[in-house]
Image 1 (cartoon, rainbow, N blue to C red):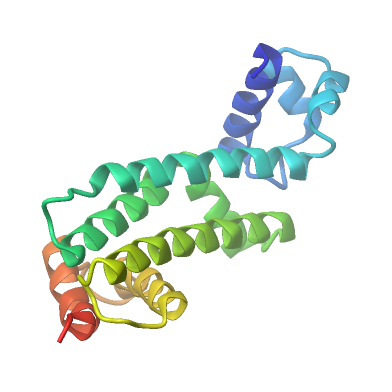
Image 2: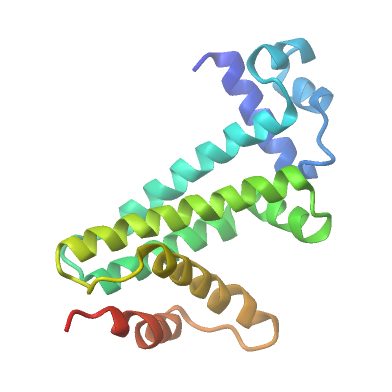
Amino acid sequence: MSEKRKQIIEAATKSFSLFGYKATTMDQVAKMANVGKGTIYTFFKSKEELLEEIVSSIISEIKCEADAAIDPRLSFNENVQRALQRIFTFRKEHELTIKLLQEVRDIGTPAVRDVMKRLDREMIAYIREKIEEAMAKGEIRSCDVELTAFLMFKMYIALNVEWEKEHEPLSQQKIAELFDLYLLKGLSPR
């Protein structure tokens, strides 16, 4: 990757993190990257394309984080929870994803809503891949992998985010127990 392209991506990430996507202008990005505005357009056609590039990079980072959480000596149940916890922690702590999630909630910017949906789809696809691997090894019984991956992802978010809005936050231990009780026991091979 060229140095200028890298500078632009870093500046845009910083600007989106500080001001949000909607409030960020290409002039701001150019100034922060210390390049002319025209230089940005030699690499990216639009602000939306720049956001897509950044989110692609975040998706790769999240997948690496989740892979690092997986321990081949542990069961599918333990590993899927470890991977989901790492995915969720990354999303919760990464400045840009925090700002983009806020923007979707508060403003509903279409471009941001689309990339956040893409982020969710990619994470569900990642989980689906792990479910398929576990099924092939006989660690879990046959199931609708797409639906199961969706349910795992959404249940994890619900227990971490939605529950806290009106209740005492759940510990990671409690979330693991609930996950095991409601979802994973049903996937155990017979």
